[in-house]
Image (cartoon, rainbow, N blue to C red; front, side, top):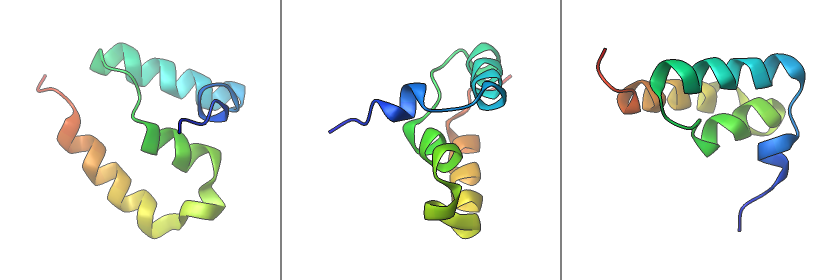
Length: 62
């Protein structure tokens, strides 16, 4: 099940960040990143660090 709130429940700053990520990486933002930005209290700092590491692995070489 996909939560629609992850696509449209973010504020302006987060939407701008996602736009920059999509522009620079030429890929859509991973759902786990959207979850971290939407519910930081649910995911917390430890999982945020893991998420950042995983996202770095998925970025194409520049």
